[in-house]
Image (cartoon, rainbow, N blue to C red; front, side, top):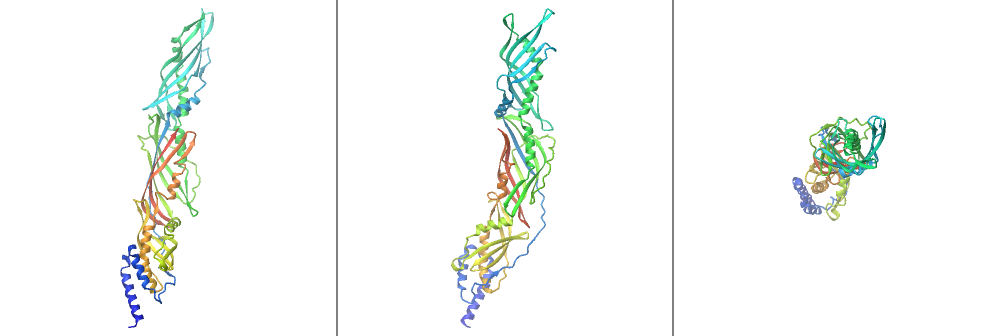
Length: 485
């Protein structure tokens, strides 16, 4: 047998051995594999012709997915000092007057005397209102004539009221005067003397109690913004959240609340506290939703207690264009081999083959052409990322030499792909970033009223291969609250 025939027989035996162990070659064996390649450099087997693998067919299985309910539990807090400050801005000047002296022979005027003070513990709001009172009393003299006498006094009125919300989301208060202290006792001029008339003023105050309570009720209701809270939240949650990954992918997260509930109002930690609960459906639309009229708020219903936090369940899309770019970033500059046996990845194409992800790699260098892999994407809970497993490869070559080279290169590429392909949902997923910056989680609504929230955790579930990308079942957890401060 000639030397040339012996060499061909040796190479044929080597091909058979490599083919039988092709699935067992790992990255740790990369150097040994390249050593074999170096032994095959004698002509006529030069690596110059383009090569490719068989292209898997692009097709998709029908997506069957029913979204889980999403829940928003939103604490609402009113800072007592801020409420007190705002009430004092509006509670000033003349508060109440009765100028009709003909009906009961009395005129009464009440002015703000000092700062309105509030405290709230349990379910009772306590109020102290310092006021100045002016009273004019018409007094008859022996039935023939009369004279008007004036009295001035200053008192600190004490009141209590529960705070409730009616079915229409309006604030209900019922202030009741529980007592008062004299700041300065009333006197009247009589024959040039200041005569104490405390008993008389007590009677006048009691006869005007309802009017004074009504004024304070109205002032409190106007400055407790629970109604504004609920209305603004209802409108905000109906606004789609715009999501843009790149110029080729735009989407809108639409949240549809099915009900809205509220927890009992209570006072603690120098705040008026309650919370709202919304049960919702969440969808991602690839086309901008048409503007629709926001439905009227449902009737207010009480919910026993609300634990802070939200859970947003949705099916999020990771487009093939984004996945390809990410994979290219991870593989760009990576060398497979060394010296003149080096292979580089120039481009990546992705699409679906039934329930598997197909990846086409354009390679240059020692081997030129496109190699196709199919793989199963999965969610890795430890890294909170989409990764690849079960990578398979179909070979279709033009000559025996390239079959040998690809048999060695294939497991190296497979190993690199499994290690280098990682799409983080926690840190770099565009949807999470834009959700975090949305008006729903962080926004100033009006002066002193704003939302603050953050995404704390993300968990993945099933993955689906679709015509537009990998769709991931996500559960996004976080916290959100509305603050009046």
